[in-house]
Image (cartoon, rainbow, N blue to C red):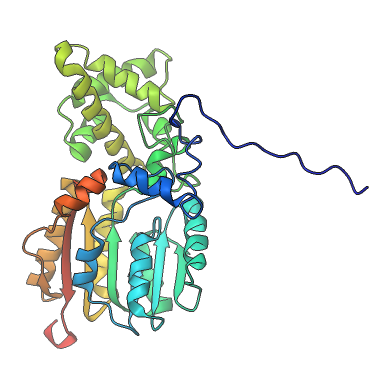
Length: 354
């Protein structure tokens, strides 16, 4: 005998008729094997666990007008859905570069796209923050098309271990790259009420910023430090306890969404990163190159709108979107997370125009 056979590991089972936790939704996380289950979840207007539904795919492709032989960049690779569609447009001729800062998801996405037939001859993936796109052009040259989807991927949101959602217990982390920087829990430790309220207001337009900030700081100072997602939700719930009972539930839900967003933006320095990306963007686009950007809250959209408008005035862009493009009602019904999406685009001016 060569030794005992490895013990069979049972799948995670769940009580009741439907899985509730992320770990129990093992069928949703295996779309190749359980396609019917995944499609059923999508038809209900939900995002399957461990997946991400790409937003505005047709609108993006209609604008980018990708041709075989071109070179493109997906500055925010994520689940790889947009990248897959762009690669299909190349019809085996050309190249796409994909960037992401998340060391956990980037490996899964690379394997997923390789399984679809997109190897290194067509696709190059780099773990690089899109604020540093100028570093990539030293290797790749300038791009005919660029896409940046500024939303957090559903795989990150839904996994409680990443700490992006108030709906499940998990460490209050919120970092896109958990190997760098400080977590949201560490950010809250020692912060002043004034600075925290300012963060909630600036990053998420939180109407109860002062009340929530005071409650968080009060808990930290008395030694009940906020380290988990549910502890932060409890603090927000307590801070809004002065509201009429009929209003509290919805107010807590909205404030949780806004405060988690504000913290995520802060710990990942998302506005600074976006500013750097937009500043460098004209320099990485080939003459006539096209860029589409998806934003998910007003602060991002205002920054993109401003840079595109100023870029056109300076002669860097020959054309920009005058109005935002939004997902169709049908897409929002199929994917509710698309509702807040705004798309803007710009076209790089020819060299003689700059």
